[in-house]
Amino acid sequence: MNLDNVPDIIVSRLPVYLRALERMYDHAIMTTSSQELGEKVGISAAQIRKDLSQFGEFGKQGTGYHIPFLIEHLRRILHVDHPWNVVIVGMGELGHAIARYQGFSVRGFRVAMCFDSDPTKIGRPVFNDLKMSGLSIQDEKNLVEALRGSNIKMAMLCVPASAAQAVTDVLVEAGIKGILNYAPVNLVTPRDIRVQYIDPTVGLQRMAYYIKE
Image 1 (cartoon, rainbow, N blue to C red):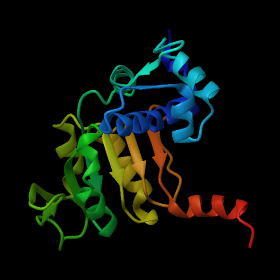
Image 2 (spheres, one colour):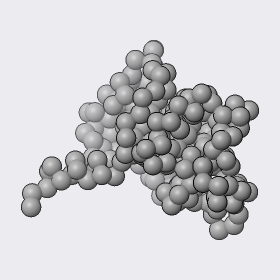
Image 3 (cartoon, one colour):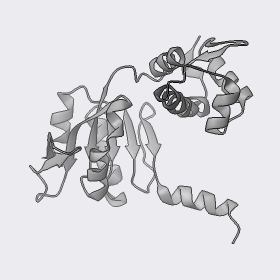
């Protein structure tokens, strides 16, 4: 089975399934069906079965899916069965809010480094829980040197749109392979770099299309 040929739209739904399954497991639910899972995520049972069939057989007719088993395999498929170190570039209000987010560690991610170009922020501690995280904001000028000596392959880009492309070029030079971009601008990257875009205004505009005044 060549997983490189799985359509991206299917891959994009796997974290949705995983999140719903983990919530069911947290409520001590051990089995589910494609119908029940579909009702929780707003996707048809047939589509769920088709998506999962790309990666193997996980359920049995009449008994459905064993939730811990499916969680384990989805984590493995998504490569989140082990922790990933992530870097944040841009420590304004958004960068700090992301650094404080408690949900990364339980989903397989850890903020390992933070960078900014503002001299007044360099060296300041970063807080991502009720106590000091042990992280401090590093100078963006040292980004390539710092990342080349690490195992970090993912970055979250929280810089202004005007700086996003230049910072992206530096991240690529430093060996970053995946960028979660919060800046409202499309990035130009080599073909082997995966970029995901997070822009609330795009989501609002998409909703506005469907909502009548």
